[in-house]
Image (cartoon, rainbow, N blue to C red; front, side, top):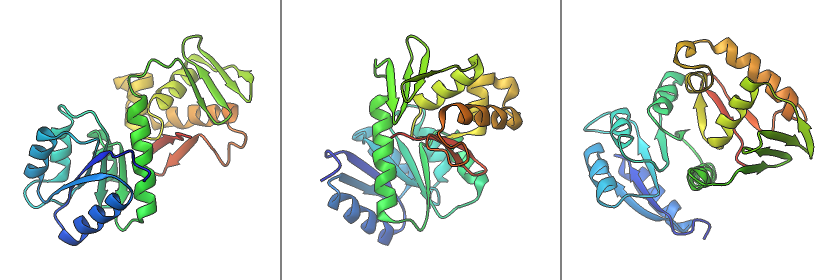
Length: 230
């Protein structure tokens, strides 16, 4: 039992995959509901809101991207996309529509369970009143706006600080280039990826022990970045 009894809703049209997910998640201690269509998934989420939704994009009645958008009109808990669509454009679209993570089929049970743990930890932190965040040797005092690495205070520029705190608030979640640019620089700069690359490189030099092998700011190739949750 590693799950704390969290309720997982699986929206997946292929019965063998549903059975595999149901058995794997129940063995890990989760409570599992499963449906085969997008419409059933939307109804199930309303009737008994789950702690996490796992959704396939290739559903028989509507595209999973549409289901995701409709869920995000009201549902605030984690959504993890499971799909055979491995194109970067599909991943970026799902993340921009509000997915917390994207797992490409085929995947291992271990990978899926790890992604679930990360998503649940992130959802528990959202809205918390904690003002000091500690991840590894990194400590950020959000109230005092002080950043320390291994107990040594680090000077960050205002943009670097905003970029770091934006990523920390979404630790464990894949953040697209567009999302980070919009949050840090504003909507008018949402296509200026070179801004992001330059500031990510500078931030890594300041907080990472080895910027070439980052521990905190992880690259999701062609999509964006993920800040390590632990």
